[in-house]
Amino acid sequence: MGAAAAAVSLGFLVGTTAPASAAGCTTKFGTYSTVKAGKTGSKAGAVECLLHQAGYATSQNRSFSTSDAKKLKAFQTKHGLAGTGKTTGPTWAALIAQGSTPTLEHGDTGTSVRRLQLALRALGHDELPGTTLYGDLTRAAVEDFQAKAGLAVTGTTTAVEWAALQAGGAAPAPGSGGSGGGDETPAATKGEVALAFAKEQLGEKYKYGAAGPSKWDCSGLTMKAWAEAGVKLPHSSSAQYKIGKKVKKADLRPGDLVFFYSGPSHVAIYVGDGKIIHAPKPGKTVEYSKVSYMPWKGARRPG
Image (cartoon, rainbow, N blue to C red; front, top):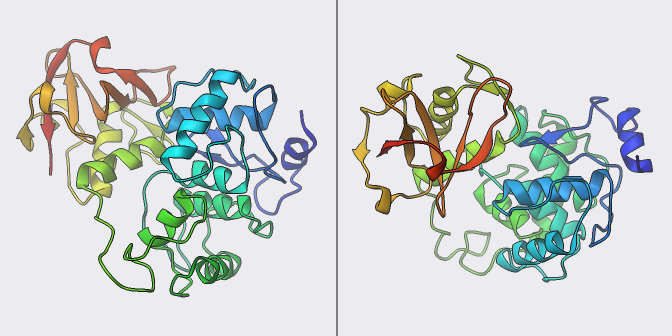
């Protein structure tokens, strides 16, 4: 175990003594050092996990391979970062911050607050505890980040701040919705919001009848994901199958609900490129899979 990981396990960081997890990935460290091809250990495992969460098929064995480095380079290029294939603070921040972009302010709680804190920690805000409370320290760190990124200094995190973090802390381009005015960045579709929520739950355990916050069954996950997008669904795969617009397999979009088996008895969220996220069965965790792995029943677009 590396020194930083050991420090975390001993409660070196303020807050909980257990390592923080973002979508099933351990992402709370004393320092966010360089991970490159040949690196092994907890931080190598974290980068592999975060890349997998972002849709890249990494080895996930805590040994960062040349293949993993190529996938990291592709992620960096996609997010406007230097395609080096090794992590720096901005790359760590972009990896950790990926996902939904909820508005957060002082007093808020939840896993998105922890994700925000850890992304800011990767950019140098070591004072942040990596907990789920948006307190005074978080507000001050957000204000500092906003000032450095050329954003309106409000202490509140909106989609604009998330976009900057997901780009490694870079200031948004002119007209992207920052303090300079101009056209707003196009809002995410409801399906994209639902999908982003589902990605945050990757690695969490299956439990029949569960609908969060850290355990899920298939329809509980899809229900809460679409609730994040403002669409109310019942906690039943067969009932969800009756809601929204029917979608052909060739017309699937990210966030669409995909149903399997007769009934249907199983539901998942479409990711793209023939992939889904779902809560499969007891003993498993929320994971990526392929549409082709199960008998197709149909698909729906709830909103």
